[in-house]
Length: 118
Picture (cartoon, one colour):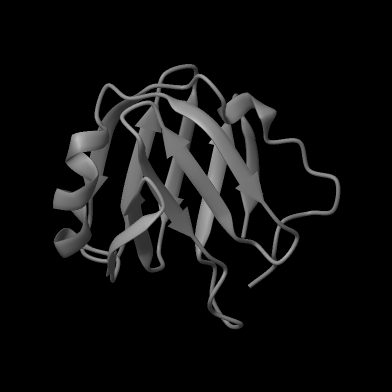
């Protein structure tokens, strides 16, 4: 809906370990150490070593694919102003979330009291 703010610094993502995957009927919440969470209300794209594995609509069906990421840390990320965020984890898997909806929020990043809405 909004894209990422120009010049936003997301370097705080690197090194954060996924400690919990929360599942709702219309969202997924990824909770990391260090007061970081990402709430997702859009399609989750999953890949490993550059090979697409699947794309899951948000909700319970996508939660299972995220469970192997538990106890893995974000090693790198890419993000663009259009709102696409791609995170590579220490187990070699990648998760990509996109700002795909022009009318609704697609994901939110909360870090140490700051909120980024995309």
